[in-house]
Length: 471
Image (cartoon, rainbow, N blue to C red; front, top):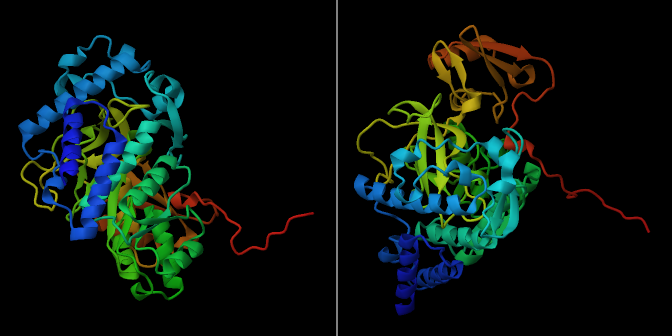
């Protein structure tokens, strides 16, 4: 216990001072926590304080964020070819959160075009990971060996403290193998947490369902669209929650509709936990609370919400773009400053929160990408608006497939005739009208894919096929 206390103190000092945190220190803390779980069944309250900062107090939060931004900007000004000219006229040692807003956001186009200039000169790139490319050309992100050990250790501590992963768990991972950092992080996290992991990737859903039916996996990690296909296949096979041993389903990367979440919980007998994360801003992430707010992790990065058009902060109740800055020392090799994620959220009304994560600020769940918003005379229509309605319609297949654009102030939706399943265009228009959205529905008879989702990132295998080799 004395050694554990020393390790906790060393981590606290490193966090406050802004120095790199030794990954081996966090790995040993994870081992200490694993021993505690084996002996007592629950972590001590003092250990939890390592991860939950004093963010309920606005003054303490602003002080923490200001110091973290200053040390991050100081390093970028010294080590990043991309940011050195951007920060040339900025006093990074006295940078305030208000002054930070005068620095132009970094975009995905910057990452794609100038990724070599974003790698800091004081580190060696070790591992490459890519975005999925479902919303445009993939971006390549490089990690250092330090990050490859740090991120899983942080994830293991956080997950064990919150009771999300622990000894006896088996995680089944059905995300794209292109997401190297995510797969590597969760695999090492499981090792540190004493859990097992089964990485299947985006294989055909029947194979994933067979794995779940073995009753080995206790947790499932996948995209909402892939979960939709799993639910559909489980229904086709007449399966129920009694056939599975899942205790949690973790999803992210796409819009999770309320209808799909409810259906998955009923089918697999496990709650669906919706989270936020993206390759470009690792290790910053977010958790969705019991009432549906998105709470970003304020320990590892700064989250701003800007107006859809312009650089001013979004007002309470207004839609805006999330702009994220991961802090040093959590982001080391290819850091970004004020990265415009393109993800749209709604600022919550002012006032205290009433949820299980009320101690930290929050925004609404992600509504989709800003580039996918359709302007109508009823107001902006987001991807979430459309998916929530379509996936609640009886008989319409999941995941929702459509094409959306504006037409004379209306939302024009194109839906495949094969997906209507007895519904008429008028019935769909009426359902949107019930939600205050004037819609024109067009029925397509072609076989084109109207909306690409991450479940389309299929990874074929040789399973079930006879394979022969020539002499």
